[in-house]
Each structure stands twice: as structure tokens, then as C-alpha cells.
Length: 64
Image (cartoon, rainbow, N blue to C red; front, top):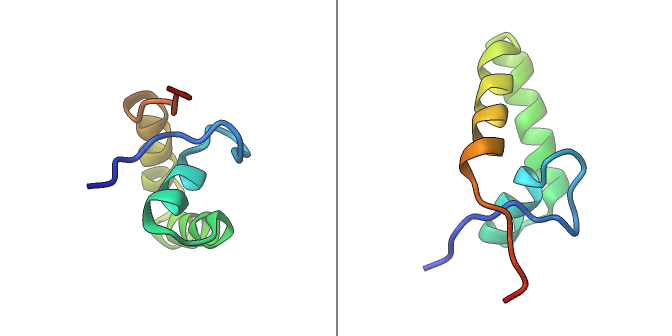
């Protein structure tokens, strides 16, 4: 089972979209575009709150 981590190698802000893209085996750019689209459609606040919450909740990937 794959786990979600914030990817520090391919991050733009916190690495959340890169981590989700890696977990789902898709390009992180598609995840970023989906996040921006959903954030704009829902009125900005829910998307921003979810992203900031993920920043604190999702652990950063370690190279163990």
C-alpha cells in the first residue's frame, strides 16, 4: 500500500501535489492544475485550507 508524503525534491511550495502525483503515478502538474481548478470553483477558501492542513498533517519524505 502506497503512503502519501510531501516530496521535497519536486516541490513548488510544500511538496503536497508532488507527493500525491507520486502516490497516484501521475504527473504532479496535473495534480497542481486540478488543485487550482477546484480551489477556484469552490471559492478559494476551502482549497487553501485543505492545502495548508495537508502541509501540517502530511509527513515529509525521508531518504531511509
